[in-house]
Image 1 (tube, rainbow, N blue to C red):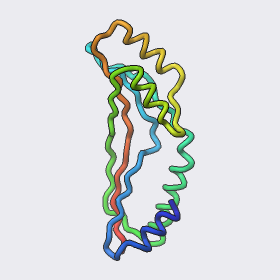
Image 2: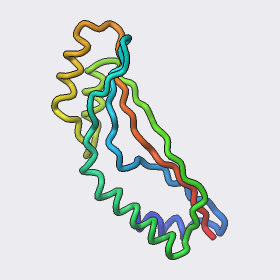
Image 3: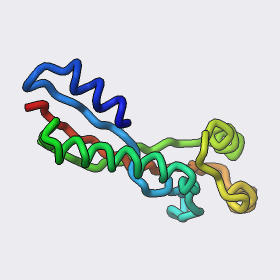
Image 4: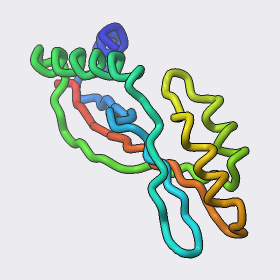
Length: 135
């Protein structure tokens, strides 16, 4: 991120905008939405990604302190991924790079949905979007 911010600053005209879009440090929340209601199942463990996010945050704080950018706006929002089945969730989990789906999640969902006709597995990922301006 340090190198990326340096390159953005180098190539961005004065008054230009930097849009920072990334996930927060929160784990992704897994819910099971069934006709009788919504049940919290667990969270995808993202602890292995925290050092990289901490380094990115530090690089951004340093660039702001050096006056390279000025914070203009920051907002949080959720991205929701819907999985129609345990197979879909398993496929999603296999594409995770460093985050990890806890071992108990798939068997728990399988047990809860064994006799259910209509259910949806939802993954909530908290994101942040921030706008910075080069002075």
